[in-house]
Picture 1 (cartoon, rainbow, N blue to C red):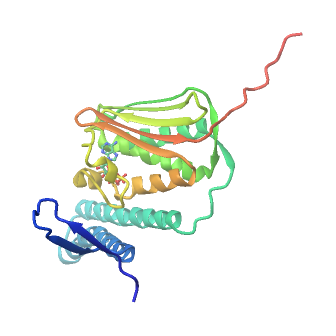
Picture 2 (picture 1 turned 180 degrees about the vertical axis):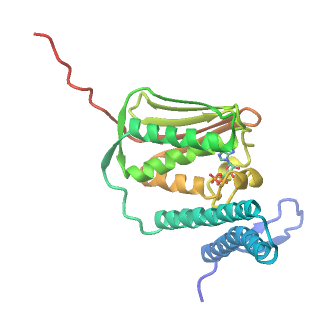
Length: 272
Ligand code: ADP
């Protein structure tokens, strides 16, 4: 069989040398438990919308409904189907990033373009979530270029921005900035005036399916996989994901990239 590690611990409070023999859980057993947890989570996430969808199908089949009511049910069914679609999409993304995805490559991408796309998405999402909307601001200290895979960089940044919008109540503020640090690294930061996150949750946020507020996550179309995806993309690009938050005041999610290339200024016309 496989070798087992034995560890012997002396109980700190036992005066007479009482010993506890414990067998370390091997890495293999841990990996297996994690896999089982993951499958259970995925099944649960799929079963919930499926149950709702099945319920609507039965209702449509058994009740004579007015046209507008039918349309309403079909709309709700569409939402559930979309939710399952997003889940499958996120699972595939994550499995590609965790597995054998090729290294991201060295394509240069303009930060201005990444931010502009985040802004379009955030404005759309904010108006879909509430009529009141959010105060959104996007600013760039210096246009730079980042090396890596443009689609992945966009996905990581968009995830952080959409989380800020989704968890911040309407009327709140979301501020997105890009700046160069004095050591040449580049910092993408998303600050929000949302509910904030208690310190003990913060280290666990990038775990697959870990959620602080399950119902808010669901209501706004969350899969619980966003930050796990962000973490992997950050790792692949040598970037660091930093999270700071104060309960009741808001959160700051940052991606710190190793080197950002300053976008060369346009050649100036010099008067002779
Ligand atoms: P989800 O799809 O649930 O948003 P994520 O992996 O993106 O999944 O985030 C994990 C959890 O972290 C969320 O469910 C939420 O509880 C918490 N969270 C993420 N971003 C924020 C934020 N800006 N403010 C408050 N909570 C947040």
